[in-house]
Image (cartoon, rainbow, N blue to C red; front, side, top):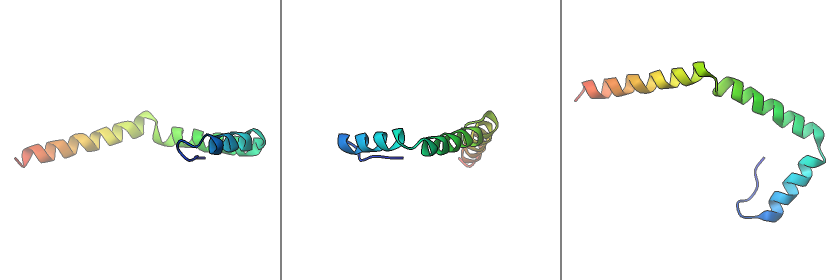
Amino acid sequence: MTYESGNADDLRKKILFLLNDKEKIKEMGKKARKFVEQELNPEHHYEKLITVYKRVIEESSSL
């Protein structure tokens, strides 16, 4: 859920919406957990790091 930057009233409305919708909070929590488990786990991090290393090696060998 997002709100308009610098708009305190919009932020207030979003907070009140969440405080009054426990199911939405649960849904957002489940989605956040799924994201963390899939995207922020060590294996995923290592895969990205290996990709960067390979790219650097390829670029440096072409010099």
